[in-house]
Length: 439
Image 1 (cartoon, one colour):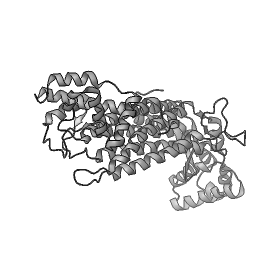
Image 2: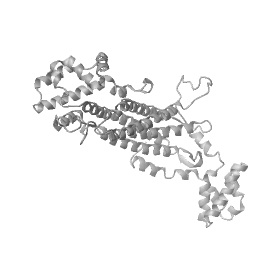
Image 3: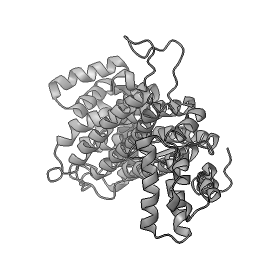
Image 4: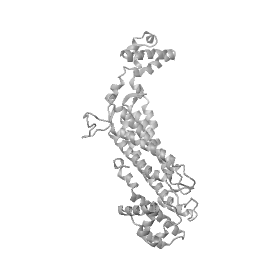
């Protein structure tokens, strides 16, 4: 992933040096197990531990140079270790296949990436929760089909986001568990040249679970679950970002992204304050959805394994994790610094002359005994006057003799109660955040 969308901690998990360290550790842990089983000597293990060392940019370059000849990354790595360690390196990789190293390393890296992503989700959830309680009773117009419907509170809207984030977190926890597995089972998964104990030992040292059964590779439905989870998480963030974009439109202007000192919105128009953070999040979510499709395509491989998944994962594994990490950080900061305009929300509530209370009038007429369809026709007839004639809705109702036959002026006025639409917000918050939760 380009540096523009990369954060250092997540990106470092996918660096060439980090990858080589994982491979080294797996080889050494496997040798440890072989020593315990009497299949290799303590002296060989000691020499390999002492001389394997860490990896620098120069080491990466040397391994790349070897690979240009071998056309095989793991063989190039092992050849480098032979150069560095000497004869004792012949005990490395005994009875193993390349995917034992590659897939086990990938499982450990995805596990660590998931931990960073879960930290990001927690930060986003805290930001959304804090703003939800801040605006628990901040009334605004609710919209369906982009058209004014009935009032809602901005806090209620954010509580819905929080509830969705909880589901995303639970999915990510399950996806982490699915990919946090390793295998040291040999060329086709039969443990023909090493006993299962070696796999168990390596996985225990890495904090992974052994794959219950494998062929040459760990099965890719696990990875597909992981990247599908990132796609859903990204799509949720896009959903929230799209809402912010709509609410920031000039004609609405109820919410606005932070706009910092010195920031410029347009090279041509100095007045512009555009929702660029939200638009960026919408774009990055498309990448995550695309990566999930690629991961699904990787499930079906030939027989015990082919290599068609490898090139895909070299791209989507680091990029998917890095993009998701960046999105979580960007969205958390957006929510933490988001500007909310309650006065504009109040103004927009009144833009349609009170028709947003039409359901209350409909129900009042029905409760007084009027047939529902007849009541609907009465209310709609007067609501249309607001659109067509610019008449205030309550005024239109008070001027309709048929309405006044059923409802008094006071009963009509009682239908225009804004606070009615926030009366259950406490219960909604108790459901989402827990009964003891407070701002």
